Length: 359
Image 1 (cartoon, rainbow, N blue to C red):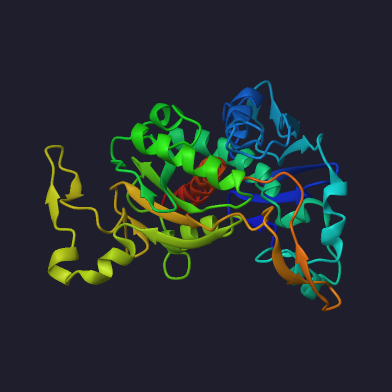
Image 2 (cartoon, rainbow, N blue to C red):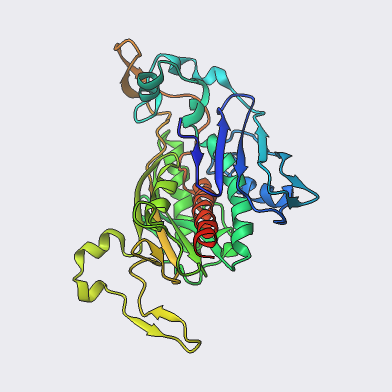
């Protein structure tokens, strides 16, 4: 079902939104990496529902249980299994959706593909599946930290509100300083007001998460088919509700000439090869060039909304649906740790592959 991701650092997630629980099995993690349940929990708390007035009110502590692979705070080099049990399911909210397809959701496509689906909560199509990714990402971050790599994501845009943020200097503390996870305070306040207003109308909105990875070693990436930006794109585009990916100049680069867009080289005081600009976004020829990797991910408005919409049943009957259940009016604040996790998984995997192939 496509539930496995990665090559040397490989994860497999499991579980449904309203089943007994969700989790991840991580294979290929090096031994003797220091990691605690508390460190993993920090990342899960950033992702969990019910954390603020602009997220879904589903009340889940998302407490992680380490089942294997870690002893006395250190990885063993054996498979790591982490589970989070579901506690606050309200499956009755989805009774109507057993036959009525939610517009722009995965209901109809899952039925078409499998002939069966977990109706409650959306099953595997729910963002609750990302718990396993975020838990695994916490471990990947610890491995990357040994090489000095730092990953910070933040909300760049909500609908037509766009923040002014410098990816080279933004800090995690700035991101976590408000509930929308936008490090531009004035813009963050406007974003929160817009999310509340939209949610109060039974509707939803989308936006853009930007992510920077700093101090990434030069040489990561496996051309031709496993180019670093290609793997990053697949990683973040596998997250729920994603609809677009950019790296560096992105689509804006199409409006430049080559002389305007090219990143000229120079050698800094330490003798390190650098680029004057970073329109490449830290990747050239599918390989990291040592500059900051900067990507942006577009998230659509949440598909499940309380506003009445036209749809059809699984037998083709025309009906209307005003969805019940507890859903985020905007997925962006909780998507920030998800994007960080996926970027960490890709960079960790490629770091291990680089060591294996080139020492």
